[in-house]
Structures are given as C-alpha cells and as structure tokens.
Image 1 (cartoon, rainbow, N blue to C red):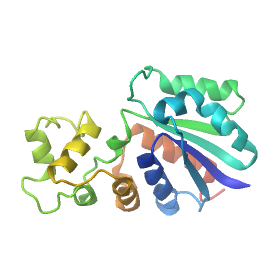
Image 2: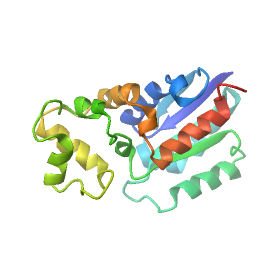
Image 3: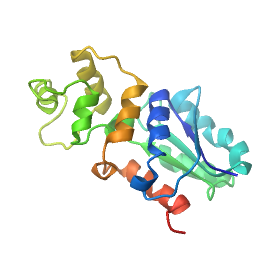
Image 4: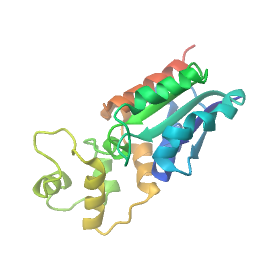
Length: 201
C-alpha cells in the first residue's frame, strides 16, 4: 500500500507539495511515497467533488489529503468545516484530512527567507522587495505578511518581468526553512503528517 494520495487545486500547489513531501527530515516524518494530483476544476472542484474524488484511493493509500485555497469566487466562509463534515459523513474522516489555506497558497511564500527574494527575481535590487511592496501599498508596515499575498507575488514578478510559474513554488518548497512558516494551515499540515507518518512510531 502506498503512503499518501494528495488532491490539490492547481499546478502551483502540485509543485510545492510534491517538493515538500520529499523533505521528510524537516517535516519530522519518515520517508513517504506521495502521489499529488490536480483537480481539473481547481478550488471549487476540490471543495465540491474532492471527497468523492479521493474515495476510490482509500484502498490503495494509507492516507489522503485535500488541499485548496480559501479565497476563490463563490467560496463559502466555512470551507474547512464543510469539507471536514463531508469527509466524516463519507466515512473517510480517519483516513483523510482537508487543509484549507487562507487566503491562498501564496501566503506560504512570504517568509523572511532570502530564498524568497531570489525566487521572485529581486536579489540585489533596490529598493528591497519588502520596501517596494510597502511603497506600492501592497504590504502594510504593521502586518507580518501582505494582506493579498497573491497580488503581492504577481506584482513583484511583473515588476522584474519574471514569468509566474510552478517552478517558483517548487524552488521555495525545496529551499525555504520550514521553521520560518508559522501559517496555521501549514502547521495543521505538518502536524497531520507527523501523526500519520511520524519518524518514530
């Protein structure tokens, strides 16, 4: 039986998670074999159809994950609760978990790691990336992260004429210290993986 089946909402999430699952030591888990699949209908698809999508994989994988953003058109305010309830109603609550990233995956990008600046094409530029985002009104000085993390990523890339691609998310997932990310959804993910695949039984 394989270790983990992971259903995600888009290619950027696929790239990040595929790389992240390789970092077993940093996650505090044993080595795992994970399959990451993108739902063709993105976040709404994972939300509305994800439970039925992953159900057939219960017999082939020890556990299942559903990952999606909280911010998308038509998203209800209680996404996490609704998916948790759907998993429980389907009898999958012990096998699978849902991780809802609020507002979206890009919130994981914004750590104080120098690799973020490098991956977004801002190494050696003046003003430094954080100052530029604050000057543009995309990052309030009092906030630990941009309030609209996706717009901040896209604006930074546009400014340096760097195409947005899954490779950026793969690079960040591979290189940034996981201890730097204190986002609630990420901590939920790491705790879940440790419960399932802890390095010491």
